[in-house]
Amino acid sequence: MSGNKCQRCGKTVYAPELMSVPGSNSVWHKGCFKCADATCGITLSIANYMLYGDNVYCKKHVPKPKGRSVSNVPHAKETPTGASLRPRPPS
Ligand SMILES: [Zn+2]
Ligand SMILES: [Zn+2]
Image (tube, rainbow, N blue to C red; front, top):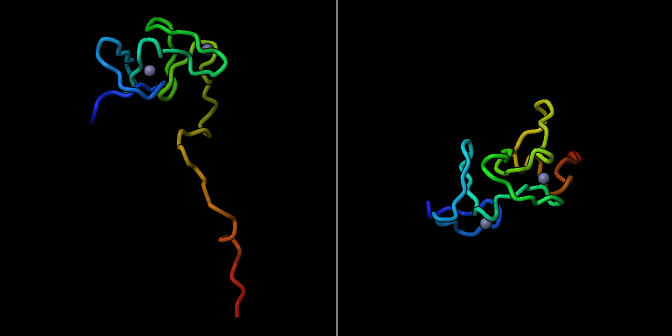
């Protein structure tokens, strides 16, 4: 492992400005510890953050897990084209 990369900006986080939370391996700059909602971006603190996945949100924007249908698999179905679904005609 080579250093800690900020979950928010992707740059290396050095100890003086490192922000980490229990339950996540991710780290943030103190200044990057913000709500991950694009329209919000409110600065969070260890007292009011909500951890969801590898991101932190404010209470207002933390996604609500609904049932179990939504998994955090990044690329669930990525078939290049539908061409392979066509059966080959017998010759
Ligand atoms: Zn950062
Ligand atoms: Zn927010």
